[in-house]
Picture 1 (cartoon, rainbow, N blue to C red):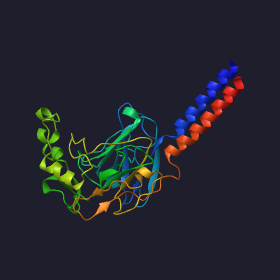
Picture 2: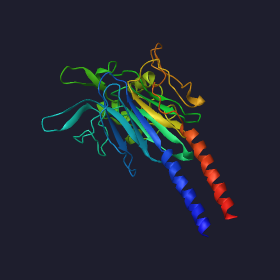
Picture 3: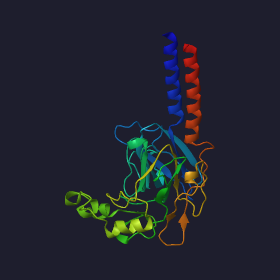
Length: 309
């Protein structure tokens, strides 16, 4: 009996070790030529990540580990400053915490959002980049080491601020420049733009000319509430790189053949294509780690069973 208990405890220990090693990692990369303050909000009922907001100077990156079944969103805050009293605020993406850490607060629209639900139906990660709450900064999400038919990069890498219609523009008080582009819902607060009231179903809420303009520029990003078919992506056993202001025509390193030729995102002008973030996440993929640890567990199990006899 003692040997059997020892065997069971051994397997449980290895299970815990595997779970820890295979936690999902998010590598946040700032390729903008200005500072970005990423914000993070966990879904309701989900434990927050170790940080909910931090600063990334141009060219910097930071990696964050998320536990199994985590869900939440990432975004970039821009034009941030701290006043004489120590109050921190941003002109776009501000989370209203008065600090660099968002501490459970979400982004004030307009803001480009990267949304994730890990270990969902069928063990798949579900993710998207959303412009439903408007746009403030180019963003690209690139899965690393994952598999699946819809395991592909997504995002909005076009600068929509310059092309934003005047009625949707959020401008800086100092110089009047466009710093973000509102959604039609935020700008006009009408049910047909917000998919609310009589327009609260997929059958009654259709793309507006404004959301269609977002979709034409960024065909893989969510442009309105029911834009699911072309905007939701899924991966099994992936880590993720989230890049602000990804560089054009960059090659992406990958440890999996599936992602070597990541589907490109056409900027809408027919001339410039973005393929991903040139950021090497790891020398070993999660799939490789799973295989290695699986062999170790199997070997230990055989050894323990042999000892029982």
